[in-house]
Image 1 (cartoon, one colour):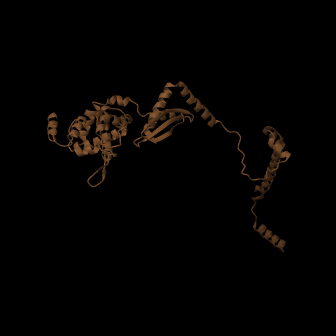
Image 2: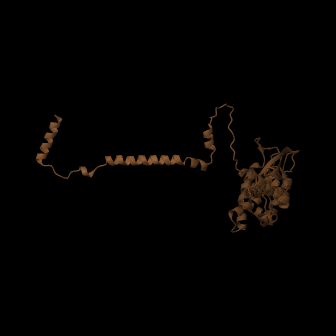
Length: 357
């Protein structure tokens, strides 16, 4: 390996990019092949560079590619390093390793941030610039050497020398998620208020957020070059305040108790409906007013005779109906069992004819 690197170095002894190759060798552990990939990876969008066709070129496309490669590589490494761990743990650990803040620190530790090509008036204060360049560097390695070269770089140069993966897995970094989880479990109202938004001297946006609990209790504030970064800082500070200040914690729960009590207390009286129209109100006489105001028991006693009278009438009607029904019913005595003779039938017919005449 050492001999191959030496031979590769001899191949480019007098090129103008010799210094860049040497600096990249210190970071990567090997000499780059196609230097154009790496030069592109180090070109920030503030550096106005144009291709031969006039199009502006920067590292954003390589950043996109490197981001995808990093997700696959780090996912592979985490999967092998933590056998038996559930998917949620693996996802959380990977996200800690590939987030922009971590990559920004890696760019600074490796010296990659010093190689970034920027505009003449742009400073490298933003940690996202270093993180983006690190992702673009991985994309350049992939195009130049392939997937397994990227894997070796991350394992031997990064995770082995600069990051303790076990400590990272145990460390909590998503403070906003933790604060939201705590507030939801305890049914505490919580929100992030944007209290300031401005640009710094390099025209980079800056945000300042504040945490507010139960609409009245102010938590910590946090600033950052993105809304997410500012909210994370505010959430971290608020969690620290709640852990250290018992009085603040008591105030939060006291405010919650007062709010929930007001929400749960029933409103007995109904509001009047007044739409501005003069409507005639029905006039009640004293008797109806007295009846409406009588207690239920007295009203029931007063109406008892009326109910008994109505019941008696109903029973009388029912008896009369039964009698009428009885008169209309089939009487078996009307059916004569005696069979008429031939003479009786003729006599009955003559009698009927005589009566009709």
